[in-house]
Length: 287
Image (cartoon, rainbow, N blue to C red; front, side, top):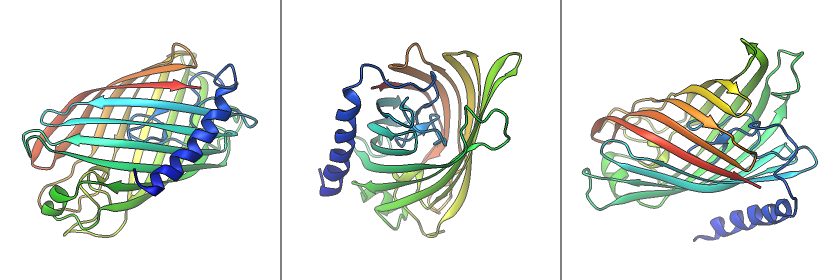
């Protein structure tokens, strides 16, 4: 583990120890921290939301840990990590991703570390029901790829990079036949190939591009949500065409301590393999 990882995880663990002294995850409403997306931030499965992870209110600290697994047709993807929400204002997150290369490079895998920071700057998605203004957050995700042999061969220029994003989230209580509806829009500046697993920048483009990401969900009950997501991605490498991510998901929150998310994800083309689709399962624990 490098020095940056140690420092970042130490800060997260100090906050986690503080949160662990409480006998409940926090005082915010069920599901108001979302689940954990594939890069470690609080939100949907594919995209970060403006919501701060966990259930800590403005006087509390909330901690979540998660594990996600999805096996596209020719690959194997898994990610785990933790996130800390401080006073419903600031979020720190760490995630470790791994992509098994399957038949593309048998027996090999690519891994990367992702360090996230999110700050709520405006509004409240839940309590501002009498205002049109959504909750807005600014965030970044710094990514460090450990295995650059395959990305370099494909034309990737860098082993690390930082995504910057702005997210806006709004929850309408009782908006659709008495059911709560949530919408999120995220705009991400990125040069990452396949989220960074295939490096950053390329022979076609080595600059930042703004990519939109959207989520829409309806709560069938207070603890059961059904929705869909779409994530636009850059196309930096001439070796293959990078396609957008799409999913349909069900998220279940039986208690504040636990959430489970199942989804059907269309990853599009990954490296030299087209039509990569997968069943996605993610578990999150809150403290």
